Image (cartoon, rainbow, N blue to C red):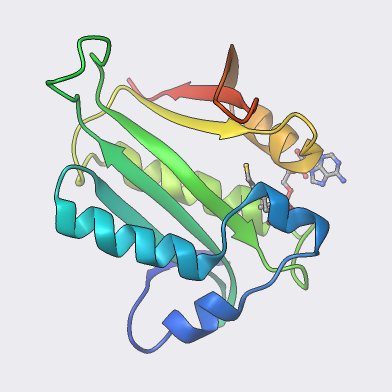
Length: 161
Ligand SMILES: CC(C)(COP(=O)(O)OP(=O)(O)OC[C@H]1O[C@@H](n2cnc3c(N)ncnc32)[C@H](O)[C@@H]1OP(=O)(O)O)[C@@H](O)C(=O)NCCC(=O)NCCS
C-alpha cells in the first residue's frame, strides 16, 4: 500500500538518492534541488512547500511535492489560492506499478483537507512529450487548460471545490 511520509533526518539521504532514467531527468529537478527549494520557500514564508517521500510498505519508491500558493496581493492578475504540484517522481526501479497514480491520489486527499490552506484548485505543468505523466494526470481528472509555461509545458488544472 502506498503511503506519503514526511521527509526527516532519517530518510532525506535515501530521498536524494532516488533515481530516474537519463531521459526522464529532463522532466523534473533533482530531489536535492527540490528539498533545498522547499527549505528556502519555508524560510521566505510566502508559499508553503509540502514535500513527501512516497513509500510502498517500508520501501521508499518516490518523491512528491506541492506548494501552497495563496493570492499574491501585489499581482492584480492573481486572484486565486492554489496548490502547485511542483514535483513527482517514482524511482526507475519501481515505475509502472501504479505507485505514481496512488501517490497523486493521496496527495490530492491531503490537499482537500485544506490543513495547509484553502484553495480552489491544483495546478501543474507537464510536457506533452511526457506521455506517462500526461496520461496519469488526465486519468485523475486534470484538465489541460490550453495555456503553456515559459518552457512550453502545458498547464493542467483540477478543481478542488
Ligand atoms: C510520471 C511517473 C511519476 C509515473 O509513475 P508510475 O508509478 O510509473 O506510474 P503508474 O504506474 O502509477 O501509472 C499511472 C498512469 O500513468 C499512465 N501510464 C503508465 N504507463 C504508461 C505508458 N507506458 N503509456 C501511457 N500511459 C501510461 C496510465 O494512465 C497509468 O494509469 P492506469 O494504469 O490506471 O491506466 C514516473 O514515470 C516518473 O517518475 N517519471 C519521471 C519524472 C516525471 O516525469 N515526473 C512528472 C513531471 S510532470
